[in-house]
Length: 492
Image 1 (cartoon, rainbow, N blue to C red):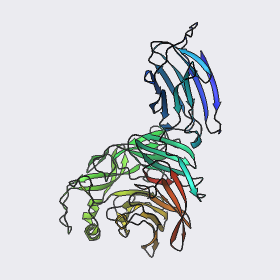
Image 2 (image 1 turned 60 degrees about the vertical axis):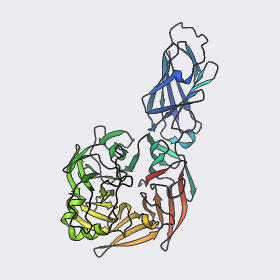
Image 3 (image 1 turned 180 degrees about the vertical axis):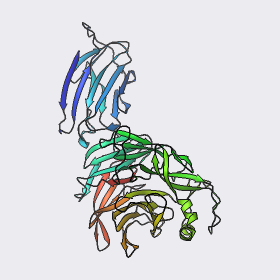
Image 4 (image 1 turned 120 degrees about the vertical axis):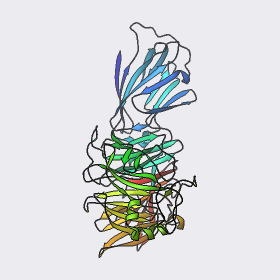
């Protein structure tokens, strides 16, 4: 026997198409059965799910949302008796040690108002609740807004909020969710790839990417696997081990971009034993070198080493390296020294070059499209900066963290007579690590993310600028999250 039924949610944002295939035998009689415990119930799904027993109820949570996705479920009862259940007003008898199937079709968007509502409920014959299925985990970081957020109210914002037992990657638009996935691992670097079109993967053309961290050996880095998603957030490609001439390693999660040829460009941090005697303070430990690689089939077909460049250009690099602080893993005094720490990359189509932020020496470099020649070194006033981006061919912006000065500033570089001139605008809040910033219009600036929220519960804020003075006018908030590496506003 099959039963089809369509239900519409109250706020019209979620349509559920339910198909139940009941394991009923012709002429099978329904008889009373003893109460079934949550430990006797198991749920399998075509999608990633998690479950928890709450009192006498098995609560099942979807750990991912895709638009208009058909998701199949199987509910099994480990009972020696016939189990009589009711779901969607339909009573059915499930034979001993058996189960039944159903499927749901998600809506185009997932409204926050639906997150706490079960999308499927199963009770026993007396109406006692047995199973509830929810569209998201109970710890989903709910979004709210305060103040004037008009400039971002219709924008997609990509974030990776860390919660108590995992990390989310979320594409939100207002309070509507276009995509989310929850992972027990650390997620980082979620962005839309707009620098140049990527070549198609096995399943389609990548448009989004985030990294799932795999290696936690050095806290200064975040090596893992890049998950590349198409326009509907389906996995179409991945980047794991990258073979460079300095060794094979997992790519870094701080940044990803794309070459003019359509290949992904990633960062690897390779531990190297080097001769540093040419510096005023030679290193007694190995270093972590930044390797920028254009990757094809897991092989670096073009690559740039910061250390090799520094050795070949000592007159430029020595003053920068000698004055920078020495960074290594605070959890291990014998860890490699983090001499470059690349944390953002952008391929700029108009100038056919790469803009790369190197945090440790507090510089930006403009690198040619062949990853061979450093065209320009731009000092950032020892800001330990993040998220450098071309605003135009003659303007670059970045977030100056100024970690040790306990102040954050908006860095605005303008090209004048062949030189990049820096203007700094102080934020009234401080993000000591990570984060991103950008102009929303000529008088408003967005500040998002950070490895530790700059205010409890705040994912990002809008600031109005008047005569180089910033005033906070609106915030985007998240409930019960620890931090998000960035909060990227997707360009319209």
